[in-house]
Amino acid sequence: MKRFNLLLVALAMLLALAAPALAAGAGPGVSPDAALTMLKDGNARYVAGKPQYPHQNKERRVLTATKGQAPFATILSCSDSRAPVELIFDQGLGDLFVVRVAGNVAGVDEIASMEYAGEHLHTPLLVVLGHTKCGAVTAVVENAKLHGSLPSLAAKIKPAVFKTRAAHRDLRGDALIAAAIKANVQQAMADLFAKSRIIKDLVKAGKLQVLGALYDLESGKVEWLGPQPGEKASAAGKAGVK
Image (cartoon, rainbow, N blue to C red; front, top):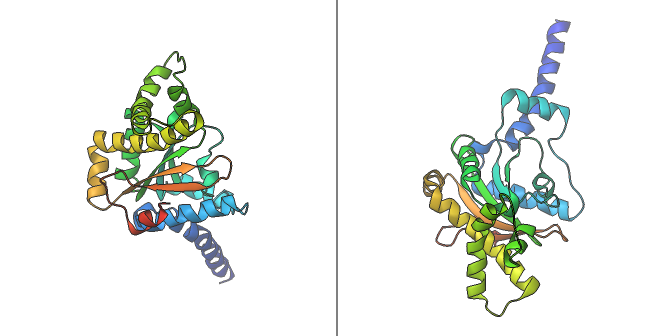
């Protein structure tokens, strides 16, 4: 009897540890609005200097290793070392499916990763996250000489820079770069919709929300830019646009 009681106590402790972890990472069970709220709340904690560092303990590590992953959001972001996604949104192991590449561009490999997250992991929210003072966008704006494989990456950013120059002929220097960085987020979303039938179908079916965002390196705050022009935003998505 004593042994049975000990077993019940151990089982209760295991469930107590697993329940919040599973709930926080349950991609299929979380709506796009709920996922966005979790990102906003996490960023607010980060900006305030009061991060909770959730889901970073041994139990969470073992749980995700043995039970698999169920992230609640997919993030396409820049590989800049000053923009660590999990820290920005105060999330932990198994919470976010992060695709990082210089300039947060949506090339074939990046899109394939996002399709995997949407179709197989069922993440309800996909965020294209740019950041201020992006070196990749700056290099394209300033026509920097690029070598190796960099020209191929820059080619994906050039359309955003061209559009920015055409729409804002009066902008120069930092102001032009800042506008191009925002345009590059929109460009990545446009490329994603243009090249991925899977993503388009998930959005059309209401299973996925795609939003753009911009991280400020100095303040730590994430500005929500809304959906790709022509696409509908959820209630939380609309509320996030500033």
